Length: 125
Image (cartoon, rainbow, N blue to C red; front, top):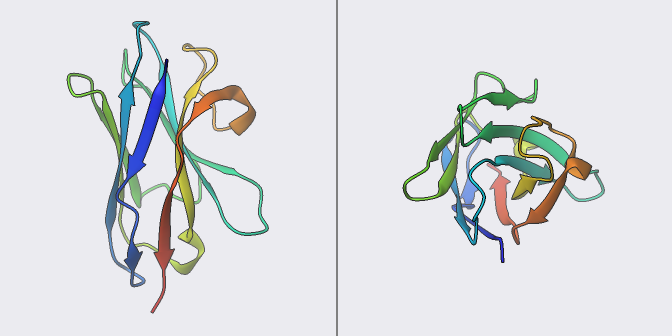
């Protein structure tokens, strides 16, 4: 059974940094795409970034380009999201998920099937 567990969320001041981790288990297939999403209260779930485990292809939402970096450790089966220069509007619950099609890079949440439980990121002064 595929499982994803996020961690690393915290309260941070504007301009600060956090690194989120997504630990994967139960992945028996060789190729997969992992996405990071976020959802703020009253807003729709938003795609942040995604990465392929096979060739490392990456996508970012325009709102985080230049500030967030996604990476993977295939040996440890962990996907990271390094978030720098955090802003108030980055406050949300952050989720990782696996794409339904392992060869489609997408930031649309409906293209993703298995989800973690989420980790809270709060940016506040």
